[in-house]
Image 1 (cartoon, rainbow, N blue to C red):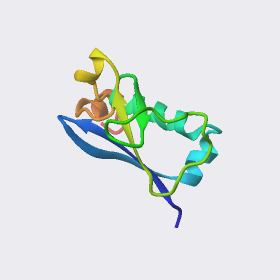
Image 2 (image 1 turned 135 degrees about the vertical axis):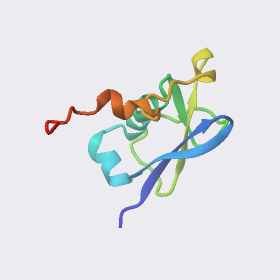
Image 3 (image 1 turned 30 degrees about the vertical axis):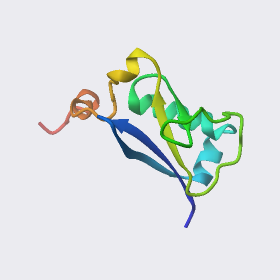
Length: 105
């Protein structure tokens, strides 16, 4: 069993887990895993932001290559757009918008 890194985001003032991924996958997909995790946060949240090790903390060093097992990272949106994030991957219409057409009917 591989150790995981976890990503949380704030939704309506509550931090919620949105992603848990094995450290080995993070390091396999990128030589800068924290930058890659930030990109994933952007795609889920729908606006630019930073990764931090605490809910209200400073941004991490994105050049750091090592991740600690069990670490919880927080994606923190920036600026005006962070007040009303889009949550593109979390909207109910996402599945319908990108669903393949059925061929049987």
